[in-house]
Image 1 (cartoon, rainbow, N blue to C red):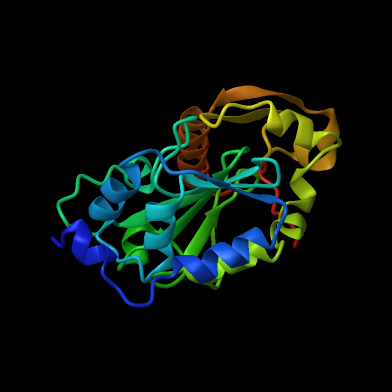
Image 2: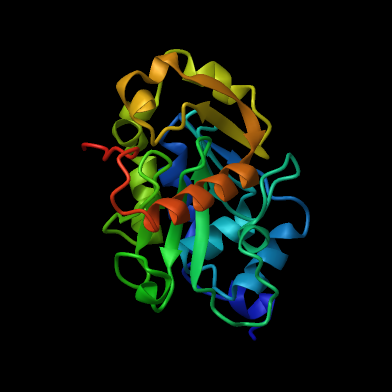
Length: 237
């Protein structure tokens, strides 16, 4: 286990360049880190500030993208966004996690970095690659990039096209009204044929984000046992 001082002692920290990249996008809000939270998160992650992951942990409480539609995890925010260490349950014992949750959207979609053995989790992609769990597909898909490149993709505005099929009229107003501990539940569910055919006709409301994660995992496991199920649709890019 390296100390916080060791993790911070680098001649070329990632934050200055990353901060400039993020500030260039007006759709990104950089949340301030809670006092002491950044150092605690950095220690539990055991990554140096030479990495973009460490830079986010130490210098930010996280990022809000597109009015908070996407929440990128950092060192934790007093308004309710957990730190990377909290969200991933890292005890600070130096053991690398099987995967690392680095962000989520208001619909419960998750971005995770693959650990050393993605196949052991039944995940696609390579070690260190960011994968996305789609609330409309209930499956993981590799994005072909690591965490640092994923942040650049966000800074360059990649979320607009990525989420185009999952947004409805006035989604910004519904998103801005949410506390950071909550997301939006959609019924009929996003993976249903009904939602796929007419997203605007769905009923939506706030729900704790952890409940959205749990519900989606439950349905994903159920459909994995029923490979011939016809309720799911496949998103067309």
